[in-house]
Image (tube, rainbow, N blue to C red; front, side, top):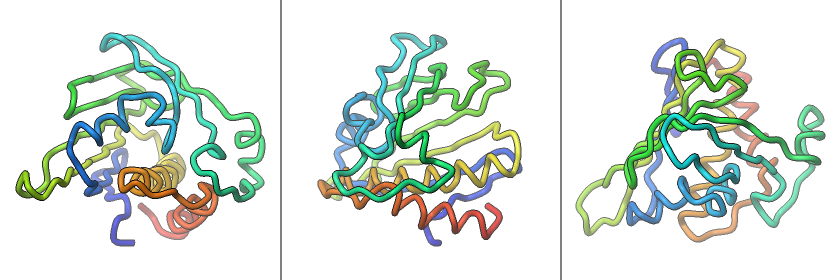
Length: 184
């Protein structure tokens, strides 16, 4: 897959997407709980770097189109699930970073960082989004989050382009199985 996760090392993957701008529009999909909830998870960010915040995932709400959840995700899909995260960086409209997963200690937790940069000339109105997920504990976790991020970023691409995405679980199945078959 051309837009697959790039493995930077045994504990780090990276995705790059080119989205329609301006940069403030793309930033709003990261910072604003309601807009982030259209492609990833809802939850108001912490007011200060170093503080924790909650995000709520409900994958069936990411599109008006529906598909059944995979068997291993049925309960999560039905009830949603939450995560506690620690805000690591907040530099509007260019950088957002937070812990990801059950551990919120910055020194040991998995970390997600989004960087936004203008792509090309200002008149091109394009934004380069770079997502780096680091401190990933092992290969199974890496494969799992690779498929998940790929699916979520596909939904973000639809949203940023003003389109309605297909059913999330259909998108997820396409990418999750690709990462199951290949090492990241």
